Image 1 (cartoon, helix red, strand yellow):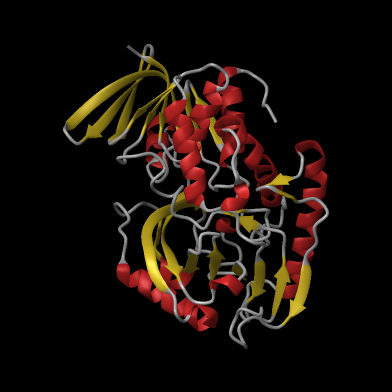
Image 2 (cartoon, rainbow, N blue to C red):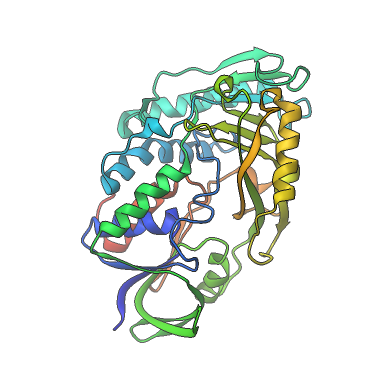
Length: 396
């Protein structure tokens, strides 16, 4: 029998949409190509709950607004769907932003942007509240320092800024979402099924599937396309037009050991650099873009594969910047796609990758396409999409 709505993709976008629909009494079926939900990009990232600081090269300011709105609604929405969450058990300390010597923006430009981010937080915290991963966010400051951050080797960085931005261990987020989906009787899950094609039918859509046992089909009244690297190809079939997306493969590297207790989270700006994010359990996420990003193009190139050599070289480069990690070892690594709009990479000051202000929700005759593009903005995009699908108010 045709289902009321089928959600393609079981990452954070698909699972939060299913929960937002279930909260309105609407059942759904999540179709996920992997063997379990929330096992790819939603899991393998640094978990930063963006406030907009890293998007200093978006001249419109729209990305800052999107990130602040997403960040201020992230915790309340997840607790609505998942119940109480102990955010502090997986929450990082606040980030230092280190201005590299060859930064695409000067320290003065960055400071001007960071002050504008604080202003946006103050404006949005009134109507949305200021709950931010178990912390109050309104009234915070950004403090500028000359020279390298204390954790970095001398000579790397012209200035650094203390910011109120934090990260959440994505494993905690995925755990709560997976449990909430499993416990909700209005949500069905079909894993190890990849949607390859679609046909419009009198009653909705017929989806062509690839499974471990062969090909299959599934009939549904409406579709919400929340898949990740596969979303643009399906949208082309549904909408009949190009989406202008680019695809990057980014490697997640987690290390342990070294002087982690004295290390604050660091983001190196502004350009193709990296992050160091200590999580409360002692694991440290590290990335160095010139090594960790192994593909950039206008189409995907197969399934991303974990690469021990890439992980080792990433760790080794971070050690040259952060000497406290000299004794660290790689304990986990993997790879996933980053999908966004942009024809050039982030080393280009004018790249579209420096903004995330495109409309995340599009619809055509029952086919909904949803991609907020960031962990931060995914729950709010799902809440808005569920409101549109059911013609109900957004509940914030």
